[in-house]
Length: 434
RNA sequence: GUGCCCGUAGCUUAGUGGUAAAGCUCCGCUCUGUGGCAGCGGCGAGGUGGGUUCGAUCCCCAUCGGGCACCCCA
Image 1 (cartoon, rainbow, N blue to C red):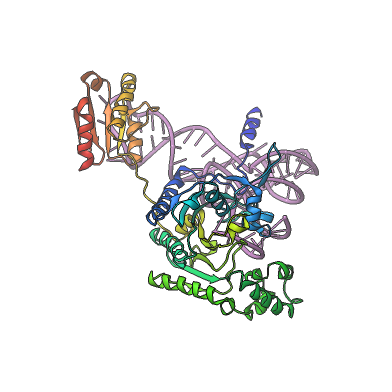
Image 2: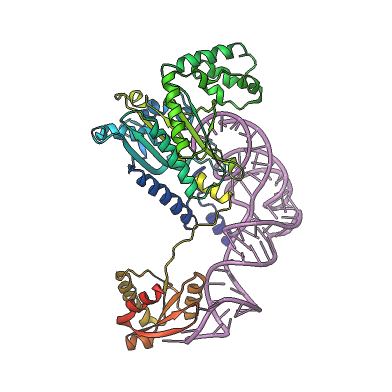
């Protein structure tokens, strides 16, 4: 009875918070692989790493991401400080990077500034596979300089190379232009006029958005709206010459890079700040249920929305969890964990004590050594070494302590040899090389 | 935030209104100076809280967590 109570108490331990996940050691090889690939790519293309704080003033996102967006309206974690400021856990990187760009005078450095980040973001959503309340993003920003379409292409290039280098198959790139402040208002008007004729028949969400954010109607997936959506005026026919030639150049650069794409004139994204290029990357087949794993676009007006001077910018973000889920869905082999090669086995208390410094000596020689010091039986230690796939075991017992020697045993061939302790590092290195 | 489905050891699963079984894993022993195999043994569970009942893991409710759809997005 009493025993049962204890058990109950233990199983009553707190669970992790909804939508938040532990990334366990077994998962780390995937994370290492993905983040390393992302980092190497970004560095190669001349991006410098910037890690803004997770916590920002909430109004940064209200102004930047957009007070009208779902992300800010219903998904942002906000909190009030003791001093009365309202802060938010970042729901995305872009506004933070823009803020940092101004705050630290990066506009006075060579332009454009190419910046990348890797870290967590937070959105209060209904969790599902591939949708978390804490997720990690690989983020790219090209800020400043001219609004050169070559950077739109380069950002897209990096995300698609990321997918390729990770051996993700069946990648689908969709892109669109949503115009600039000259042509977009005209298109919005046309869209509103078009929908006004049928607004009784569209869904309530669409009816509501028709006034404030009509472009979002293109994003509606409801059946009742589908017939009207299909006949919607094509934005690509309506954008101005400057915008269409900008898009055309982006496409030419992508062609040059042999990156295939689909123009999707109904692609619209959730943030308010986009202008011209918008894009999304997803996969087809296994993993497609996760939706897009990367997306982004151009946001030449964002800096002004934040209260700064007009500064062109283009960027995007890839979801690390989604990429890993896609890799698993496509049955990629888990990345091999590069493990240590040498396992030290002690026999007896004296040897255990002395082995501490044997390990230290090897560490100073750059040899990674594992052990199971908490285990006493030699058998158990050997078993562990074997199970974990070590090639070389070092056996250190009474006799060896006395002789100042150590046994080097090859666990594959079961051949072993006793060497003087002072020659250990040299002998191990010799064996590791072959 | 809404609707629906789900919740038994670390994992995969079984079974039952009378408090639960197995495989794998893990730990140990056979074997206190030599691993892989084998044999034996051990740890370990019905998310949580209530209700109904003589009695609940099973039925009901709530809550937490997961999943699907919507919405949105990475």
